[in-house]
Amino acid sequence: MTRPAIKFVPALLCAALIACTVGPAYRRPEVTLPAQWRDRPASPAASAPAWPEADWWRAFGSARLNELIAEAERSNDDIAGAVARVQEADAQARIAGAALLPSIDASGSGTRQRGFVPLEGAQLGNSFNAILSASYELDFWGKNRATRDAARAAAIGSRYDRETLALSIVSSVAVTYFQALEARDRITVAQNNLDNAQTILRGLVLEQSAGIATALDVAQQETAVALLAAAVPPLLQQFRQSVNALALLIGRTPEDLDIDGTLAEVISPEVDAGLPSELLSRRPDVASAEEQLIAANADIRAARAALFPSIQLTANGGFESTALASLVNPRNRVYALTGGATQPIFHGGALLGQYRYTQARYTELLTNYHKTVITALGNVENALIAAQQTALQQSRQADAVAKAGRAYQYSQAQLQAGTVNVITVLNTENALFSAQDALVQVKFSHLQALVDLYNALGGGWRRASSG
Image (cartoon, rainbow, N blue to C red; front, side):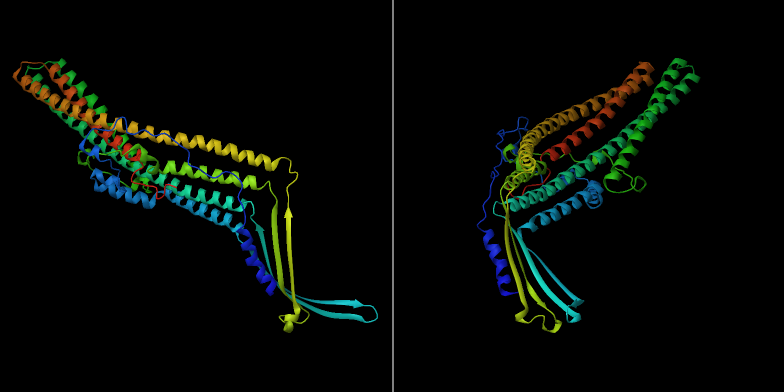
């Protein structure tokens, strides 16, 4: 390439430094946040607001849950797809940024030609050339920079989307695991009550043969046994379906996973919600919504810049010769420098329509950002009240189970003493079964509420930059 052409490329880059930008600068929307959560628990920890750790699920004290979540993070197909989408967005950002740099191409050719020259006859000739060409669009109005900025914001947003999805998957693994344990515990309660009812039935049959109990007593207990037996199959179905759902979440086939354990082994951690003013930096979905706004704002700048003239600069330089041996001889240098400007005049309203579209798109995403923020606030408030009330319900239900158990023991003793009939025993038996079954369900509801609270707080994620 010749020296004038070589000097031309840096000149292009210097010219880009004087480029200006048209269109609005981005400013984060103002959203009024409450000073405190309405349903924040009054506890010593509340005086020092804290946030969940990155591995928040370890607070439940379940080694099996830790293993399942680690496997989901490695093998879940949705997370793998989100990682691929991040790579796609990075590639798009690289493509969009390429317009800010000159494009340089090299070419070479050789030609042998036979032609006819009057008075001289047929002639043979050779032609060789080696050319290095550079082209550059001067980004005077900032269109290419805005396009690059929009792609970069989309790439950053894809990372936040991946974090949002990962948090959702981890939360689903925890809830589904607890649901499987709930089904196992309910099966255990139902089976224990069924075994106890069958024991009573056998005793009544013996008493009937001795003339102490009546056929009605036996028939009523047989009905109770049948009802308890009928309660088991739906619980077995729920358990298997929960395990199958869990297998899908961790990337396994249903046949390859089984679950044991009990909800009694799971700890119910205390979760503090921090301060509402910090929530926007703790939720990846809020961060993603803002990156969409940033990208839309950049699209507005790019669409506005498209209304102004575009300036293209090109340079070609190299060597041309009839002999390959003398191709790079300085006397055979050739070059060309070209500059041109194009001003849009009439495009059927396409450019103006695109500009107005980007403005409307930004307005739409602005409402989406506001909705995402207030939804996040609502998620936390709902999760806080659910965690509080299910904890209270669990405590009261445990008391109800204790009282129902004592009543059942009294009724059995009095039945053996002959002071009450079998109806009384059946009533206390049903009350105990219902109370025990309800306690298992309430414990699951409380654990689910805690997972929802962790999820609403953004898990342990924190935005690296608030800008």
